[in-house]
Image (cartoon, rainbow, N blue to C red):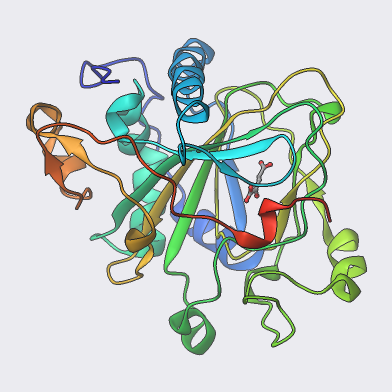
Length: 284
Ligand SMILES: O=C(O)CCC(=O)C(=O)O
């Protein structure tokens, strides 16, 4: 399952990053993006590894978690994908993490969503309940980076997000994550459909209310997810990321500084933990 990813590749060039714009976008809309961050060939190579990881996971009990009909989430280890180092050292990614989460940010999750043909509209949701720091201090303590592995088209069931709703807080949210159906008209009014193309990367607060939509096409729409925490945010306990000793030794120090995961002799396939119960059955 191991890929050698520590060889340099052609990731995005170091361009000056306007972090004030990025922070502002994350605190207002709850999502921002960089178009053309990575070369298309780099994304295609990543997709090969994601496809292989999906085949492995779907054939193993607990390897993939259902997120609705024809839709799965798979958490993986960094060394299962070539390009991990490029991704987490990309200047826009590192600058965004530092600006929002501070210099000691921690990479806690690598995984991918796979809406297949026939996937339905998900219920509007956030990925976990609002942390106390966010509620009390209006401070974001985690980020999710998403990278499409295909050129998204309208019929593929694009990701929809309701900008500004990372701050929504209601006792009516089921499990702190699912707004009641009575709130849906507001989310539908706010909703923006995202049509990312290969090479684009987005950063969002996973608290911003969102959903995957119905995939009418005959193609699947894999999306890589990178989860990053501020120190103490606590999402790491829901994930099982690990690296082998050999891989760890080849990682740049810059990456090790932000990877506080077990270093092991041999990787265990991940049994998925981050079940979002309300999404398992599916349709909104
Ligand atoms: O379809 C997508 O891109 C996102 C799916 C999603 O939000 C989820 O499964 O939690």
